[in-house]
Each structure stands twice: as structure tokens, then as C-alpha cells.
Image 1 (cartoon, rainbow, N blue to C red):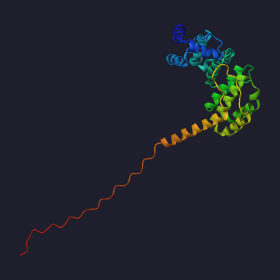
Image 2 (cartoon, one colour; image 1 turned 90 degrees about the vertical axis):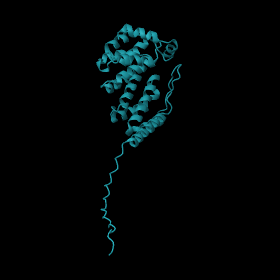
Image 3 (cartoon, rainbow, N blue to C red; image 1 turned 30 degrees about the vertical axis):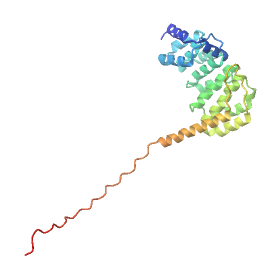
Image 4 (cartoon, helix red, strand yellow; image 1 turned 120 degrees about the vertical axis):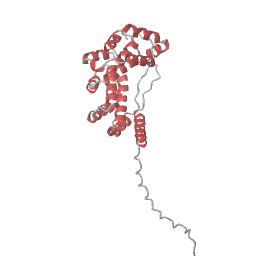
Length: 259
């Protein structure tokens, strides 16, 4: 697909009510109002097309930028290019989309650790979202994760609004996906208590970290139990066939008559 075809499709699929929803989530760019369902259909049709992703992003249209993050090749970016995309991610949706893109990279850990040090709340929140993704795929070293837990416990209440949300998400991911650190994550959640995040005019809520970690642990245990019960059982050993007892010939009745 070329740029004109994609933009034409986006305009055709756009809905005013969806555009209003994006606006409530803080969308700063011009918004067409294309649902995620329709965007995902386009992703299936386009697959990966990095060149198209770059020109879609350059349009400055909110929906086109979300689509761009979904079809871009994460490994094709230089660090400066990815930082440039992050620099203009000034709403919840684009922030999350850029973070999801960065989390797919091989160097996602170093990117996340660098971004959480940035001053802007959307940029630093994106860094925490990247680290959440790294934890989810099992690539966050335990030592680094433990250090991040201590940092979250100490700093979350003093962090900026969106940064608090990102830190809370990272706490959940570490506790949910790194079993060895689950007790430490649950203790951190207990010490932290309720995390207040202003979600604006949306219905979004900040998940309770301890509850969410417990749910993830229960879900994983259930899946593990299901996998065990579904495992094929060894076929029972076949019994050796019983030996047949030879049947002796029955004596035939004599046909001769006595004299």
C-alpha cells in the first residue's frame, strides 16, 4: 500500500465519536477517529513496511502515527530517530504506542533505562512502559529488576503524573513475571499503598499493584496446572498374552461293542 491509499482508508474509517475519545485521552495531533480494530486490520494487510511508517508518521495525523508504530521495523531506527518520535509523543495513546515499538527492540532494556531518566512525564513514563515490556518477555535481569523495585518504592509518590502510572505498571510487570522477585514486589506495593493518577476525562483507572500481581500469579498457576493435566500420559504397559493351556484330546467313545 502507498501513502495515499492508507490515508484514504483512514479517512473513510474515521468516526467523530472515536475522535472525541482520543481527544479525551489528550491527543494533540489532528485526529480522524479510526478505531483500533480498523487499525489492526490495516496492519494485517500492510504487515511490516518501515518506509511507509516513516511517511505516515510525518503526516502528523494521530491515527496515522499510531499505525506507523505498528508497521515500523523497530530495529531499523537509529537511537536519534526513536528519540525524535518520543519527543512528540505528548498524549497517552502515542506515548504508549512508541513505548510498545521500542520494547520490541533487542536493546529495549538500555532504551528503557535511558528514557526513565528524561525530564518529561510522557517520555519518562514511556521508559517505564518499555521496561514493563522487557520484564514481560523475560529479558529483565533480576538484579536490575530488584534495583528498579527499590527506586519505584522510594520515588513513585513524588514522580510526575504519567510517570507514576508508568512506574506502577513496571511494579506490576516485575512482580507478575519475575517469580523470584514477587515477594519483594508485593512488599513494595504494600509500602507504596494507593497510587493516585489523574486520568483526565477518561474512565481509565490505576490498577492496584498488589491485587494485580496476585491475579497474574493465580493465572500463571492455573495455566501451569492445565498444562500438566493436558500432558499426554504414558500408555499403560501391554500385558503379555496369557499362555494358552494345551487341551488334551478327549477320549473318544468306543464304537466297538463287547462280544
